[in-house]
Length: 88
Image 1 (spheres, rainbow, N blue to C red):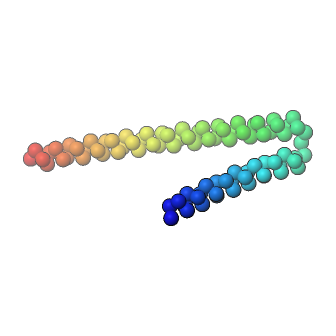
Image 2 (tube, rainbow, N blue to C red):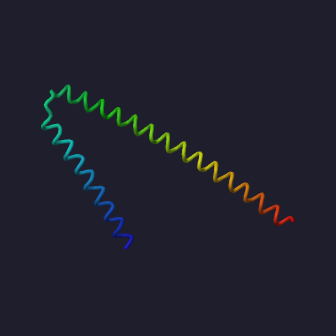
Image 3 (cartoon, helix red, strand yellow):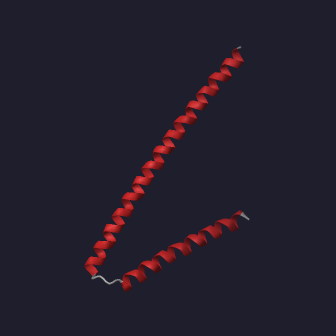
């Protein structure tokens, strides 16, 4: 059952990537701009997307660090509570 899910996810990812590639190729073929302008537009959009991905990654990493700190603090409180009850 789990192998089937993994296969389905892999197939879905493959179809998605193929769709993106096909869409990109179609967009390049029907673009109203010259090659140089199209390349510049693609480069600019790629750089903007890359910056957004980096920003999102940084935000997620920050959230993860904060969550890890909260978990560590909660564990320490739990340890102290346990020691207090055991020693009481």
